[in-house]
Image 1 (cartoon, helix red, strand yellow):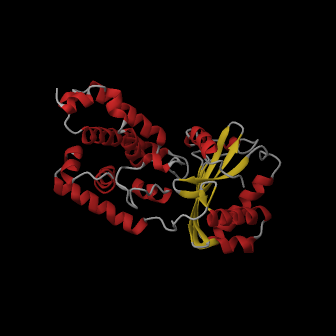
Image 2 (cartoon, rainbow, N blue to C red):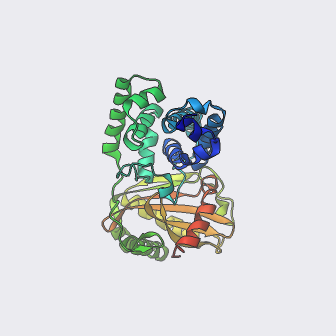
Image 3 (cartoon, one colour):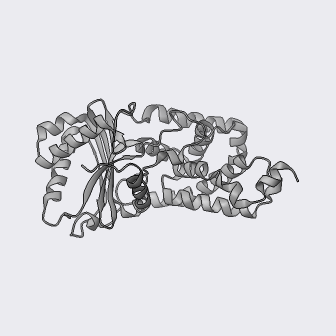
Length: 331
């Protein structure tokens, strides 16, 4: 028996070393941890059923299967996007290290929400070609085999994807400094000042913390916002651009928070969200909101807020782990 056949003989053991890589690919392709986990599980089932003794390169074999499964999922996901109520944001993740490929580059380590939104604007094939080649270090020969296209076509797909990324790459990711609750201490101070200004209604202080072209995106998925209030309010989400509009929105949201029906049993704590400085709002039953701040210098360029409960369920275990390992600090 060859060494490859011997290594692949145990389907679970031979698969496990690739799980993180496959999950990272699935999440980047789909923007959903739940869907990525489903894709990885389906990949394992196909690996278990395959004639593994004939597989000379398990990495390429498994990555190709996961990519094809994700492309199938994206067909139905596109339809779900069209029916989605309000703006769509990817599911937030706290532990980006668990989703990193073996190749460590700036792009490979970037799982920011803005980048994932850019990937979501690409066609499924552009996304796949770009991720496989530029992030997961596939050759274009391997990409062509996976996508069942010519190498020339795959090069064009990746080139178009890079052109989009050059114009839409997120800004404001700086070098890490002293950490507070897993985020940069300077960013923690800025977020604390932002929270104080919104709660006090100090518009002058708040304006100084926002970029003139600040962007705020909230994703409620059309779910009732009862998780944050004792009322059954609609949770469709908002997309706001510009400091003036953002100020009005933030002040209005703060007034709602101070209303009697707003829950008082929640706590706020710092945590990295998709590699960006963030805040998690936790209730006794679990996380009810995740916010990620895109910061450049001393101002907030973008704020992404997810309060769709379907997108927060997977954070329960992540927060429990973070609490045991880092004790994220509450605001």
